[in-house]
Length: 74
Image (cartoon, rainbow, N blue to C red):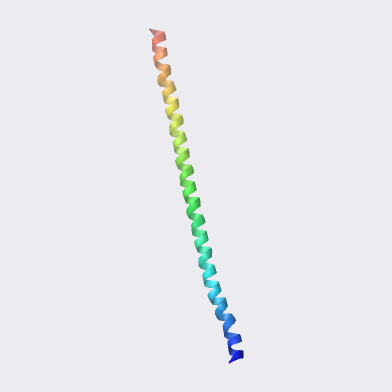
């Protein structure tokens, strides 16, 4: 019985250790993927926001310049 337990236990332990390790790895990978995805979304949003703000600033500058040009013509 003792010899049998020596042979069967390590295999069962390996199986029980291997599965959680894989699930933990998958969970870690999933969390990393989620974080990177969120970061990418944030960076894309920030880029769009910066583009929009730059365009807005440029438009405002043009808008501010136009009246001065008009006044200059007047």
